Image (cartoon, rainbow, N blue to C red; front, side, top):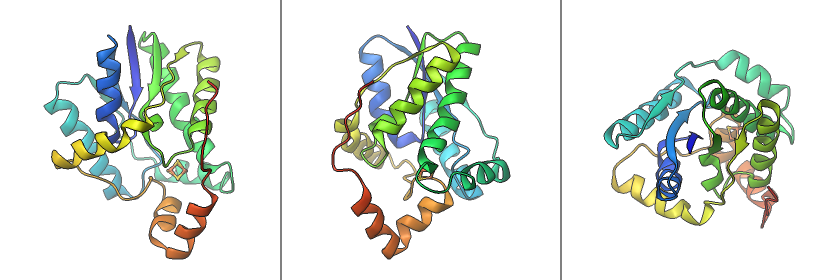
Length: 194
Ligand code: SF4
């Protein structure tokens, strides 16, 4: 089974790649994250992805196009509650489309390893993308592997980002008042039904 693994960043790739490999999947890592801003941050994450996949002989596709203006316009139109869902849609629609174009049996995403992302919204976006392009979405709850994945990344001295990706998440991460508000609004337990 050939699977296209949307990869948000190198540290989050480690555990999902190992998990899929242990189940017999032939995995290709796919970096497509136009949500990452600004330019130097985007380049740092691209570089870490290329460095890690090359060093570990992981088949990889890396979209290095930095599309700040259209991505900002897209997110600004969805700046309220649906911003992250729209961001998942943007990345997972492209992943599902690429999976079909390149003949993969299914796709999934390393976003499912992060306890800081909206797990349910990721599942909803992936399911919608799968329906739209007629390709299977492989669901896995890798959140219990998050700490292990990031510890390994740290021990390998991989670049570790300090915020999600867009400039709004950067402000939420480093502006204390927004940080507290965000922490309070995060759901305690999210169960995905996909
Ligand atoms: S916080 Fe993260 S998931 Fe949400 S819109 Fe920004 S980059 Fe995308």
